[in-house]
Length: 173
Image (cartoon, rainbow, N blue to C red; front, side, top):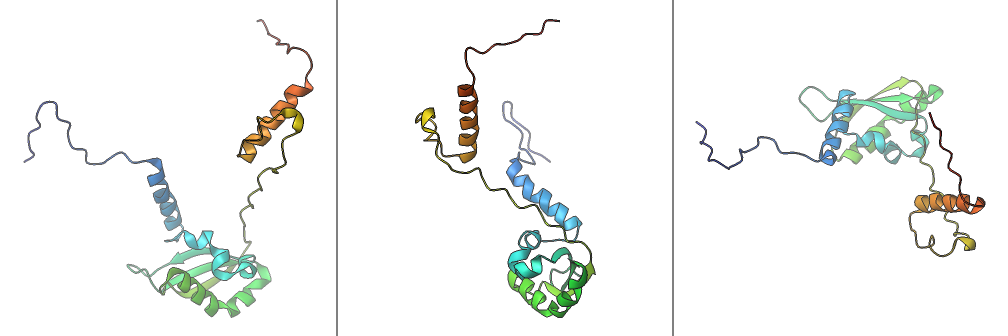
């Protein structure tokens, strides 16, 4: 039997409210697990694991383990066209590198499937860190965020380019 609640006392919650930041890794983990990845880090760090030369022509597609185990898995790679023969030749090295990355014998076999390797678009560099024009004064020089600084410089330049008082047009219905 449950303990009777006294007046003015809140009931114990079975589940607590969780921050979104706590939930996001679970969402990503569930999506990767659905497609055969127990650890998403193998996808995000593939170039570090196999090196840039092999990462250009291959990408991990799935990592599947025998039922109830987390070792001796089968890593499926998508390899671009004629590079499949080269990748087949270096399969033992790939197994060694992936297992070294995980720290245990996670991969026992590698399956190669020919296909198009899709790469994520490289991140764009932040706007240039050129100094603010002298005519804008010293107010923008102290801003550290280059993106915000670039936007404010553009706004200031737009305001400086106009002459006279601004005219606001109103549309009457």
